[in-house]
Image (cartoon, rainbow, N blue to C red; front, side, top):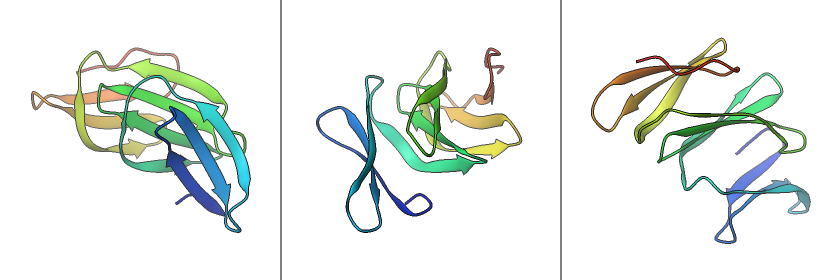
Length: 107
């Protein structure tokens, strides 16, 4: 669930946002694998994480990709987002600090 709608990752490699009445709000192509956890709404953006360790930041209103960062390793569980940083756990148990801007992730 996202504000005023539902977000779905389809089997057609598409991220789809439906309005509460079921009509299509927007759709965007996907190519980085399956998402884990729930999408996190941060200001006017969505923060999405894939099993392979990719974090995407998308505009909530349109689904447009505004930032993507690769953690360099698979991750597990939902991230904790504080300000503009996502905190995640790798499959190996390492804690990752991932800036949701143009910087590189830090172990």
